[in-house]
Length: 115
Length: 112
Image 1 (tube, chains in turn yellow, orange):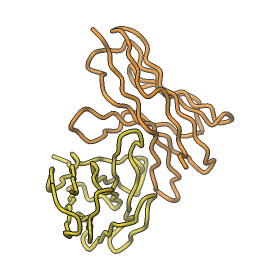
Image 2 (cartoon, each protein chain N blue to C red):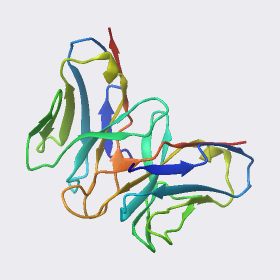
Image 3 (spheres, rainbow over the protein chains, first blue to last red):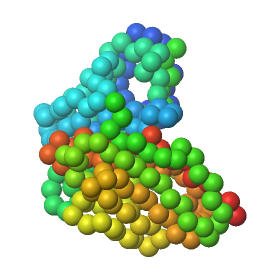
């Protein structure tokens, strides 16, 4: 089954404790992206990657890091989480080619609470 | 600065009625306009999308109307069903940059 998986699905942590949210896709997609969803703000893009070793900032990159060492994985790293990073996070992927480029497939989400 | 403005925030429609959600954008570089549907506890899923070379696209009960000169686009759900109850997001993207910008979402409730 074609899918985007995220782990963990739920996470409660404390301020300053480094954490990583993993994202993996099995569709051989070149493009991957991270979003955060907050009430009344929709989804906002954090970082995206056009392909392996190619990453770029989205609209709200402060406080986050990403890496793209393998095509299927795109982890999101919070080096020193703060309460304002409490949010629902989504990973997404799509191909960069042909008519189906731009169609992003989303993972199930990771709900993060930073106390 | 919100580049894609969506309205209304919430919408209640009777079964069989028409649901209409509107979006307006500012960036003329946008060339791809999708609508995503999100059910509680799930990630958004692509519902329907349009490119600015056409003014309308229909897929089943779902239609996008696009007005390039006004920089507006809307989603129409015909014969709305209780199973359509979800949050709908419009979005816009410039293919060159591949950064999807979302509207703030509309929570649709279809009453039986």
